[in-house]
Image (cartoon, rainbow, N blue to C red; front, side):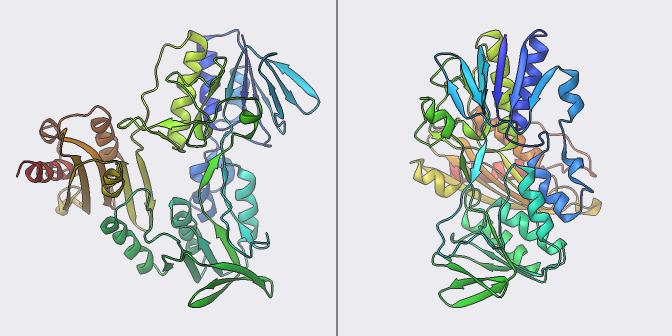
Length: 443
């Protein structure tokens, strides 16, 4: 079997690995417009901060990974055309035949419609290491920056600049709160407090702004002030890269990503799509959504690789959107719907906020704040938001499974948990929060 994978992100590596494990004779070719692949984009801020010593430290899939599995990687080789009837792709002046193909096209950073953007001292990050290297080279010698965007990337970059000794960092959001996609207002307020306590100047609700260049630096024009900075970082999110798929006549879904079925096949059954470019599905409502994470790319890559070889044996169940990050001394974890988004979806919700500790304080336990959201009609959990200094990711993973499987809240509140004073609590924090929510639901 000849398999062409277009795009070289982590999803491609996972797909190729599964294909090779199931078919030792398959010809597997990965085509990428990049000079290097195999790094983990989520680790870029840690190199920029100095937590990791080099870009080489971020590589999970090294050259030997592909060589040992006889996977052909074509670097600096963008695919310009897909001819579906002929099962042929074009890269520059060359054609390559395929029997099956996987689109791992990734996403493209959104350039916000801000008056005055001119490309000077303006930076962004993508999953491409090239952009991170450009940003790294620009950082020395400056001390003032404005970051436009208050999502995960914006917060990560603010922390990077502080670690690099920047004395004047402005974090500017058009939204009325940080991490709006993940946190309700009261939970987001806790993170906003941590940001300002750490010396970052937070400006929210900045719906009217423009940029200019002055004296080799940048000026951010706001209705009530001007900010003079050395550089501007743009963190407005990313949109699926679907241009080549659209040109090939492959269906694009209502979310703007490539439409796929439960096996991750596109409208062409011989072509699969994975990762950031594919249209995902909300596991609770069935709504078509964008969900761009490293774990989604890895999961869908493995699933598509298996289905491609074995003939559609595993169905994709969608996502409940688990998320975790570390920011300014806090671990923030969320899954499912916020209270705000649940109401927008028409749920009759009950929510509660519980404050506890991760483990016995005598053994170093840290405060934890847990917000849970339940559907009154089905009496199941549909969302959770956790903020603490530790032990958040494991709790989110547990709640993600409970939400996806629609475990009744009463059963979930009685789930067995392990305990040792140094690693947990006898009355575990999430269990305590579930009990409080169940009390409200049955009151």
